[in-house]
Image (cartoon, rainbow over all chains, first blue to last red; front, side):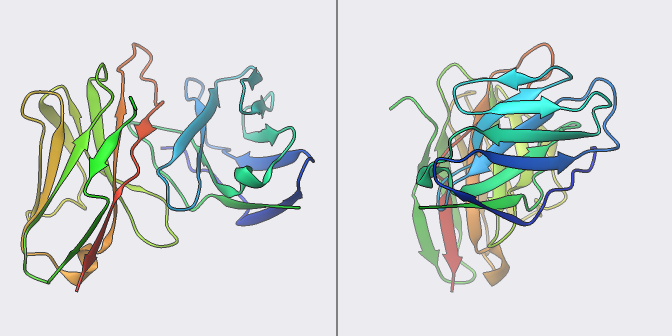
Length: 107
Length: 116
């Protein structure tokens, strides 16, 4: 499984964009990048995934660099309910969660 | 509610007792996964089923742990002779197998186990 590196924690003001980075320099050509989040006391929740093109859904946007060695998850207008741990995962045979980025959205 | 459900949500037991957890996946999902999560860590993979077949088990799954999915629907995870180190959140997830090996898994709320 390709290893991912994320900052331990980030802060964001409510209503502003939250940009969560992830490095995955050992990713191979056919491996996807997945993002999950886990709100306190809940199970993880799938957010989005991508291969090489930028992706957008109702929850977030995913920007993958051209060399695919890093990506950024963007929450365009963060709310207090987006406070959570965000996991960037490059699955090999299975999902391997690291410790993620703890995002705190403040009023 | 058509999501993944787990029962019980909380379990407190004494060391040495056996416990069993149940997971009901999303009905059309053929894959079911079990994870364990301790405080401050991300979920760790334990095992997964495709239909009723258990296809992979982590080294974390000692011989005191057993999981079943007898009819390819709900699953149970049993821990025998519980130890204090088994205290954790046990998460279940399900997914629909796709040709490209998609990893969009839907998680339940988890069962929090406390071993005294």
